[in-house]
Length: 491
Image (cartoon, rainbow, N blue to C red; front, side):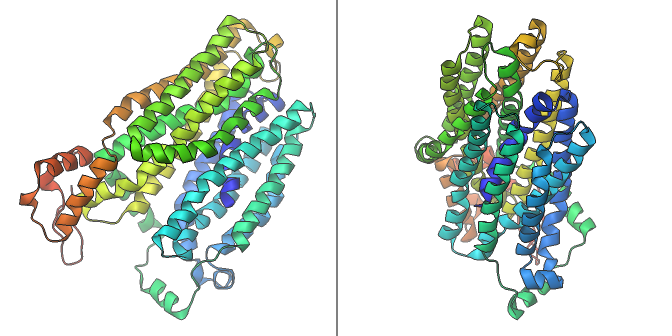
């Protein structure tokens, strides 16, 4: 349930905050983009330390009383209820919004990082863990849709305090969801046996943790399949960020007859992500990830061309056209968001034949770290580019007040920022070789080697697949281990 807030918050960051700061509060786009970027950067750094802090919080009396995970969730719940509504209060101070936004990122991470550990601690059963983690997608999509539906309804009613009321409604909605997760879940009890197990684990300083993290991050880039996967993931999701950030500005300032509720109504079509997730699960099995990537990218590119085409033709009040176009886009977006994280669980198997190590958590950390980093950069760059178009947030608040040359600039940033990155990801996706068939061959080869099979007996097909996925000669794979279980010779 906490991902009702997680999914909703991510879309508030990418789709609402920039528009709120520019269209509602009158800040220039470079400042608005800088505020969003600064908060994300702080979040990236904070996340590096937070996991280590929660892992070792059992040493404290608070950790022993409330739990090393649930203490932070409970504290975050209280702080979130107090701080989140403050962002939606009118102010002329950029420093005010920067301080509140950074505080929100810190508080939300304080809840999400320990929460993501709960499926591992709540059960050791693979099926139950998968069910707990998999349900996030539907709940996250629901949170996204509710965020935009609430704001769209208030804007449609021409409420002058739409953002403030929406902020209060989101606070109530998210607090309920967070509370359900906080009080309805459990973690491994700090029994004497578990405490003994924790104490027996190698101790790690913050400096050692950071050094190991950096070394591990570098190691993941030796994995060819992961390099390609990460490139496709970051390019496409950053393109999606450009779309979400600039859609409200494009519609309000460039489309004749557009209402202020339009962007949020179109974004609320994200509710289609729920049935699309079910369909994508079937297509992932029958057609593979490359098909899904291409399907999503083509849908998004078609939608982007349609958006710009309506503007170029000067169509007045194109609500129903945009609604259909937005449905196409949201189906593509849902497919795009589904595919990378469903392909990701197979990446550690490629690493395993390279290192014989269990490093799934490391790969997840790399994806999350770079995703948050590029998200911050995208919003900032979008704001700077919008500034160069001559756009002035305090004077250009609708189609009538936006000069044509500024409209051309807005359309160019909106279209090219999204389309170039999505097209680049489409081109890169041709090099994704990992699918159900190739993973099956790789898995069979790993099982053969684990059973004591000789590398000299590898079949030509298994050799070819292993080399394509890892990017290394087969002879360098599956290294011998020393007495401590570490590879004698690293790639």
